[in-house]
Image (cartoon, rainbow, N blue to C red; front, side):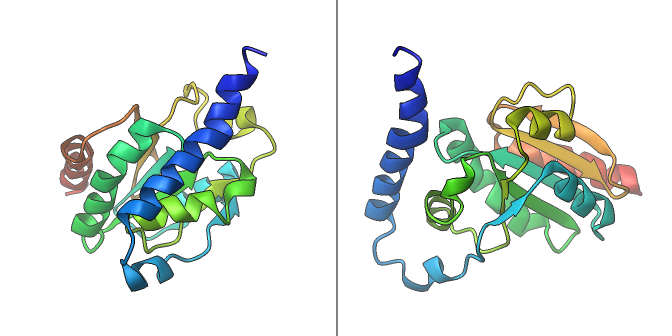
Amino acid sequence: MSSFFPDMCRRIILPALVLLALNTSSAGNGSQTDSLPPVQKIDHKGILDMVRTGDHRATLVNVWATWCIPCREEMPGIIRLRKQYREKGLNVILVSADDIGNADSTVPNVLRGFGVDFQTYIDNDSTDEEFIGGMNPDWSGALPTSFIYDKGGKLVNMMVGGKSYAAFEKEIRKLFIREH
């Protein structure tokens, strides 16, 4: 019984509170809610294929969840980073670690609340272990985690835990400078 409540809280109560907060804070935003494409299911192989085949100077893959407070705290910085550096060649891929059943409800509602208007994804590997090990065997699975890849699709940094805009920008700038 003691393990049921934390799991129930993580899976049901926290997403419900997030939705309540978003519905309260985003009332009247109008067309912003219509610009988010459907959240696509993807496994770690699909993510890594996108990273390796994309025509970008750098790719940031952010793994997050709706119930994760540090994930939500860092999201505005990631969105800002994408806006600042997209034209310079930065690709941002957001991958939700929520239950796959939330792909059409909780996940897009939270993303809309942040003003996300680009394609996003939800983990569809058969197990958490498969996803975690497939992304990086050294990753514990802690959220949020961002993986930064260079132009060739090589992992150059794994940033575990909530990070600021400045921390992300520092890593992206280093990668862009290294390229010259």
